[in-house]
Length: 610
Image (cartoon, rainbow, N blue to C red; front, side, top):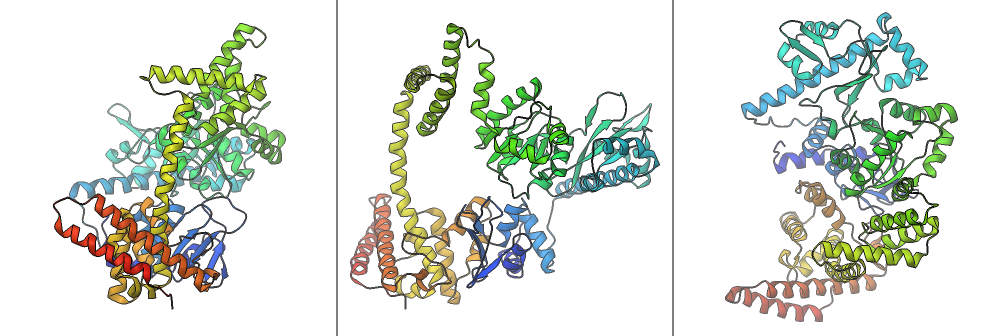
């Protein structure tokens, strides 16, 4: 990633007003000095997404998304920090300093740029051919598939000519050499045949990355040739396992899930019918790379694979891969039709939406498919089925989730809930013994509850440190009143300690604070999100919204909460540093004594926000 100095980062940030930038993506309305709208990062009906022109930050009180103008582009556009810098610098007319690259880095960057150029040129050429005399057959194919001109334009559909060296000759005329053309995956070159095209006499589907750059192609043969569908080989810019067809459009959907299809035409048909949340893997089975890519944009994936045996097998392979990364999965039933394209042509978008609304839970789908392997009229076979189900239920580590599924399975398959629970616990005990004496399922869940309660207790102090940082932002007049009692060293969480150091330094140098600049000092997206949350912390009974004095609560209530929070932070700091102090560190011991005196004094004083 390119390196930029703090000064140039701050210049770009300060010259891009966050309200102006976010207004291009989200409809905002002003309430007091803050703007609100529907969060673009999760589905909601009531606007909990706030944008503060004073802080130059955004924050969603619903899902916790937050940050400055860089963070917004990184989350919404899936940009890297460098890409967000370039986009915002270009928007504000700021010239970024030239980055120094090694000769190898420069060569690699130039090659990637050339490959992207070649793919773009090829896409434009295929697009033009489709609309000319030579593309009549492919155009007729798309028309028979009931695609509108608008849809064909949206997806950049095209045609590769019947002559097997047509694209090669076209690109050579454009000035591209054989070596780079060979690396593009669009052309093969050998001594006997010379240069010839990978795709010819095919209806063409450009494949774009999330930034709308053409990185490869899919082609369907016109006629009886083989293979019926052909994809670009992997290149420096095209990795099948880390890209999804249609994601460049679907990533901006407002729908609560993404629809995962098997083929290009399914995606295109769904988008044309109004389902702008459809994507497909690129002629390959779903991979963990795909799952992680999906996770960036959604927590919910609905599988809309073919309803035949191959589609069912593909769904069964995909479900555990999606579950592994934390995605909730459902399965759409398209019977009696084979795929989404056929379904929508026959019954229309409204009926397809009903199938989405009634999509089957992925675990219950797995159980239903598993049932087909057993004769449920034969007692022995039926018993084996229940044992297989119990074994699958053991895969749920969380007791509440496991109990919910036990109840659902028991209800659907008419088995006593306690009988099924006992069977699950028996399997849990066997699994534990096989793993070397681990406790049964029930005992493990109880252990997790104990660990969870310890974590909750720990989170109380984290919340106190977050609140204090929020209040220092909202009421800068607190700094001279509390800095004799509270210093950055008292924030024991590493990320909060770093934020406090920057905050205190800003105030000492300028008498003001700049939270948006602090966010830019953290390059990691998770850290930026955490820092954004710091400056919007609330507690029940005391809010810190800047539009209302003291969050709309009485001065006495606010000051009482403030005093209690400061005391808790100081007490925790003393305990933390004593625990981590070396026995021979006399300076640390003296600091501890001084801190205890400061705490005694603090408990006696009244801290006013006036």
